[in-house]
Image (cartoon, rainbow, N blue to C red; front, side):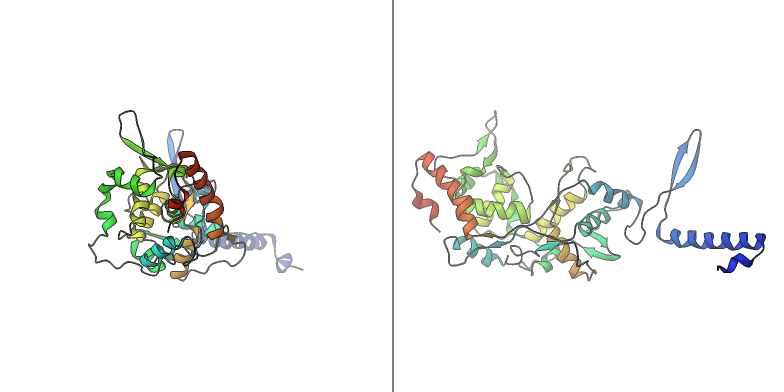
Length: 332
């Protein structure tokens, strides 16, 4: 029997109102923000409900809902035998200290990834801070934070830039890029004015295709891989020729472009949510308590067998078509 069954009607009403008021106060601590909207000729404040523990504000909560429609584009793990047929690739990775770059975490949480990108969005009057909030904790994703997750493969001074970023204008040198990346007889595609525009993946030698796969999954993610824009080909060329590259800076800029996608003039449109495994590692670095259940496992690793089957075979067919020797293709 409930205690208030013995109370007078007026007392019973007071008790119920108190209980309801207490419940509303508890809910208000978690779900609250106000927004003015115009109704007819007047304006009034209408509450917009969102989880204060999860989101920085209403704008970020709305962004989370919008991001639910986006696909997640996971990184790939590369397990190339350093003494095998593709040892040149393994040697380049080792010399750049990119071991962690090619060995991301194997699982990610979808809701954590969405929360990361949603809360990274600044309010209209705020600058971009390269920080977000996940499960109530601040998480940085600037160049230095990403560099730490990657094992600090490159140490630079405060105002120092790597060779790649200092020489970005060199991506116009398509002759050098073509000579290093393409089969003999293949060239860059040009527009009607003769300006170089893009390369085709099948025109690239196997080593270049393998590096391209790394770039388009773990550095500058892109789901469409049949054509390669010149800036991306320039990055592949820099990796192949072992130019100094601040890969953490590239990734930070890419993550910023995901945060701002569809929201700014000239920003990417409806791009997938990239770097989910890196996001999990950044959260771990910031001591975010991550859920252990319902995590998604990334696809199987890229190994020597995969390269031989999917890259070398297609390259061999291309070599036969254009009439060049197979010996050059398989040379390390």
